[in-house]
Length: 390
Ligand SMILES: Cc1ncc(COP(=O)(O)O)c(C=O)c1O
Image (cartoon, rainbow, N blue to C red; front, side, top):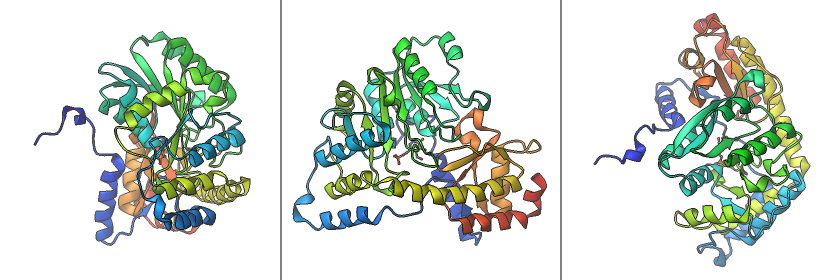
């Protein structure tokens, strides 16, 4: 049976392919140290697990849930936005709980795109934006983010293009993979661009709490709701990636529009998961401080590893990764990644999978303990060919 046309040009997600290769190497006894994926390795707060356990023992919680999510979770999301981002959201109408930010990306594309519609996607950026646009029948048009512009979109350049067919623009700050933090000026310019060109801006915001003292929301910009939808997630900020809890926030009309699609795809999440997620969102600054202390220590080790590999980087990065430029004598990030994988048994992500602008870079995850990072350094130190490229 032939697969559908919409799957043409959609490869298997890079990591699922690479993980299979790493599995093969492990079967051969390599015991690869995987510094690729941003999958938090620590558990959620114990109070979150208590709520999940206690709620799931109740007989009445196992049925279908409302498509719009439990009012308890929507209220918790609204309180969270108010407390951390100083953004007021109506829990009844301006919030839609999601099974992670990733599903929201697809739902938004399916809700707004017809064949021929164009979507601006960041290069480098999260590959799912491009795949979701293609799967929905749209055309992804990449805009490059350059280190010399602090990884901000070049709005002057974009404004000179024909934007008539552009319906959506994906933005994501703190930016993955570059770790670039936003500031209010950048956020205002993004919203002004969306408003001027009648483009719906989709801000994907899952990293605002990681190695960042000042979490920001694009909805903080005055009247942003006219042209902004924001995705957010508990995956990274609360160590709940496997739980699949995220959210979409914005004006009621747009939330209702996305709901029209989503309600045909799935039902509300398991109630105890929603109630435990609400608990997680109520955690105080101590939780985030503790997490960030750990990631800060790991980041220092990752800086050491990258120095060992001869890479250069900006120390001021947010999120779960460090983004670094490969040394001048190495062709690109794919070469460095393969060299480190095959010779030292350490996997780091080649920046090229995030787009052409990322080809000279690698991305290293902070989701391994300091001891593992040290073990990776020891392996690199003992491998001649890796050392030779540094
Ligand atoms: C930029 C970006 N957006 C979204 C996601 C997916 O987040 P979630 O777990 O909420 O689906 C990721 C995960 O790696 C990501 O890096």
